[in-house]
Length: 56
Image (cartoon, rainbow, N blue to C red; front, side, top):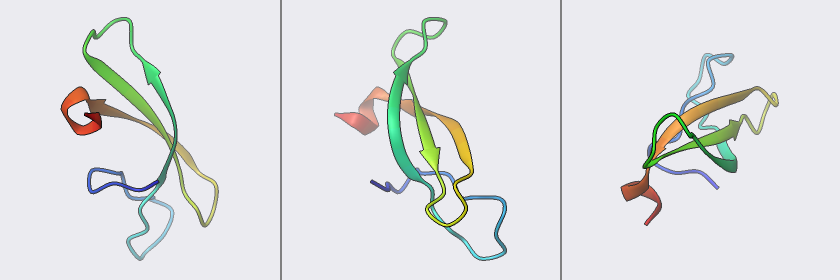
């Protein structure tokens, strides 16, 4: 699953959007989720904040 707010993988010269793998809650920041994104080409992973308004 890719979304317009998905991060780009920094390991490639061309723009490759990372795919959302899982969602996690952040107990330090109520109302915000962390998405675990993975690059479909190289497998690099990154945690990226997701606002609840983007999920709804």
